[in-house]
Length: 138
Image (cartoon, rainbow, N blue to C red; front, side, top):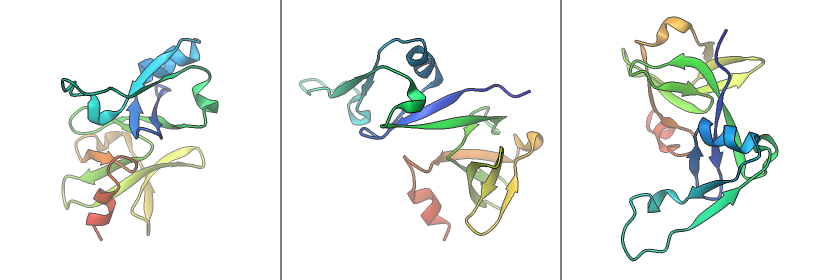
């Protein structure tokens, strides 16, 4: 049985929130989200941030992305919305959750993901932070 966990995109800042912070929100704790560009901690720069609290599955500014239970060739977890590239051939697909299963689609065709693909697939981005990766293939 696969591990059930999520990450979330915080839409106003276009920043991914990891599972540990989502779990904290579920437990009723407040989390802090900073704008991505400011993570480098440049001096004399105002840091913009938001504090979030409440059920993350009902939060209007969060897009919840489910973990597939699979990892890529580098051991990176594959989530709904990830953009994957096949090592052989270089074909690029996006990971989609539909009808209770995960599959890879290029917009024209799709196929269900298999557990033994970890050496064949590499996560190269996601549809929210790197949409240009899908445009490159066309």
